[in-house]
Amino acid sequence: MTIHIYQAQLLHYLTEENLANRMQRATSDAADLTNTERPDLTVVDKNVTLLPVIAGVKVYPEYIADAALVVDDATGCVVDYGSKKAIMAEYASSSAQEGKAPVKIHDYQDKLIMPGFIDTHVHYPQIDMIAAFGEQLLDWLNNYTFVTEANFGDPKVAHDTSKFFLNQLLANGTTSALVFSTSHPESVEAFFTESERLNTRMITGNVLMDHNAPEHLCVPTEQGIRDTQNIIDKWHERGRQHVAITPRFAITSTPKQLQMTGELYRSYDSVYLQTHLAENLDEVAFVRELYPNHKGYLDVYHDLGLLGRRTTLAHGIYLETAEYEVLRDTGTQIAHCPTSNLFLGSGLFDLSKTLSYTGVSIATDVGAGTSLSMLTTLSEAYKVQQLQSNPLSAHQGLYQITLGNAQSLLLDDKIGNFMPNKEADFVVIDMGGTDLMERRMTQTKSLAEQLFVLMMLGDDRVIEETIIAGVSRYKKATAV
Ligand code: GUN
Ligand code: ZN
Image 1 (cartoon, helix red, strand yellow):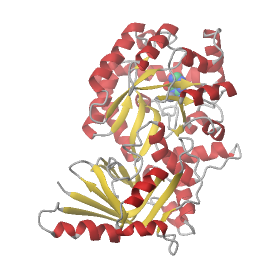
Image 2 (cartoon, rainbow, N blue to C red; image 1 turned 90 degrees about the horizontal axis):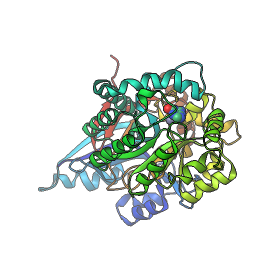
Image 3 (tube, helix red, strand yellow; image 1 turned 120 degrees about the vertical axis):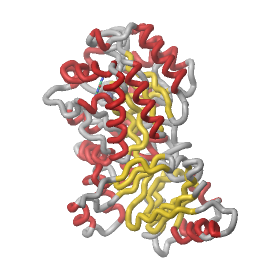
């Protein structure tokens, strides 16, 4: 066993409960938490107001300018973090004593360490048809998406693409994701196999479709459910893998299949459910045609038992007040996918209204989304909210793609910030990762300004290294 100490600037977000735990550990840098003399050095900024994913929970940014993060490579978990001075005094010197674990120091100088980013809605097979021209949702699905997804019955295609996709996630600083595979069980098997090899915490499942899609992608009603059951038996909570029951949306599953989906979902208390909701006006109209006796799109899912705290619905742009109330009453979460909504011309998501009812996460939705970078995604989220006079602060955005998305997925006991015993998934960020950013950073006067530049201009080029459960899994190649 070796203790690793990562020295850098450190930024993450704490809930009040996290803060109380942290204050209890009376290490010498705890005093810094109330430091008012040098607020730029170590700050839990209680003046920053963040809209939390979970109603009533207070969330604060914690930034430590000269920090160290301590990771135990035997468990892959965080041991401690704090000012470099205090951490080095406590861990590095004690290791010199006999019988203590050896210490390895990683010096990242002026880089920024943040918790790994979490993407709550992304389609891995669609990485092969990202950026397909000219259509809105239903034609885009028929003309591009289904054509590509048809290839994933081939285990080789599924394996190669899983490997490429997961590598791309790491290159973008994303360490966990809620992922759509395809309707082929092979696509799920390949994805989990590769994720298990990397030890990334991932959630996926076979896509359920039994009508209104090309025949070769539809799986008979009961067979699709049986495939999901087999996948749950094999993969759910094996290491860091989780299963999500994944009906594509109300259009491509028969009422019978949605009903069986709901029954399966309710027979577990830890399996997830993911699908799409009210993304596009033609889609909403089609669902109304298919389900004339329901009150609306969400009512179909509600009636058939698909809603709950472990359900994430992508989009939710076109909702009535009564539907927001159902989301609130069932704890159902919404994943907002700004680059996708803009690319497909779907519409403008009302973030503040949705957050006033239920938890919202932020997601890429590649291949309708145009980037796997959660920073680029935040940049587009900012613009979508600007059009609705609701500017998104960098703190709100960066909280969302880390602890906020972890909370939405009920994974915040494991990932999302640097509280001791959480899994050490993190990214090393170069705030001057491009020439433009380096130049722009020299003109900034505050941390908030720097983080906003990171959110607006950052992408995969700022990700220096990505660490999964204490193991480095991606390092940016440096040009010579
Ligand atoms: N609705 C149903 N399937 C999909 C999909 O693959 N992408 C998006 N953006 N919306 C969908
Ligand atoms: Zn999607």
